[in-house]
Image (tube, rainbow, N blue to C red; front, side, top):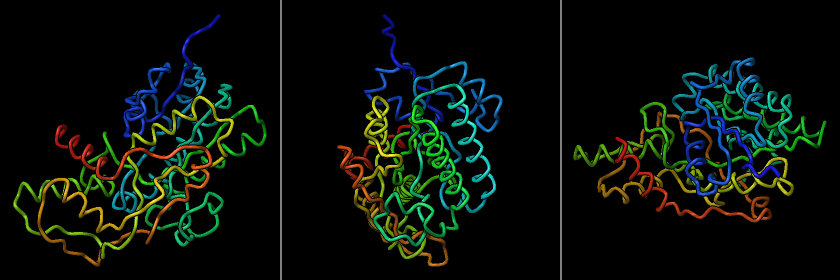
Length: 310
């Protein structure tokens, strides 16, 4: 009798999602292969095809990607489209060719139209114009999700499905200037202001735009939950907390966590992206899962991680 643990291939093994997956307590039940871009270039079809065939996983979690905040997306739209498109197409097609029965594709709430009514429902994808500040990234994510859907429609033996998480933050996030997302950027700003004795911190726009953020370890929990059994998972499903906050709220929350007391100033000339981005979690609740980490606990853990690593 073969009692070996099931083998899972996690792309983006050195990224925030990949590393949180590997740190999760459920990871010990799996034989994990989590390559970084140095181990296999997913934009190279031949290399991707050979790697997947050699590993022969029972399940693939596609978490790799070129990621960044508004600044990075606006500065490099070509890279965000082509590199993410190539990674998704190559990896998913290689998995199908190798006969991998299960694949979890990690999407993004950027896939939703910019003017779609909130909360964002899965059926709204491709129902309107995308947000220009991250359109390339969004198009690549939509194509990967559709490819999973097409493959499964042609052969139900390929259980390829897409999870669409809200914005994420947490351990192993990127805190590099110009590359980080909102929360790590705020943490860096607050810590620098605290260290330098600054009395003012700048916020892009008026701070009223609303975002939903989930601690990355909670996404890992959801991924491992359905990695074992995808039978009742919809083709596409949002993963979120079901609640959003304004940009001003996030700045205030981080300031309280780090102990900074000062004033915020707003630069109204800066881009802010979509006015609101809150995902509908109806399907997720029906599936029987909700995240466990509160915003304050997540911010505290993420700030601690940043201070330890910086």
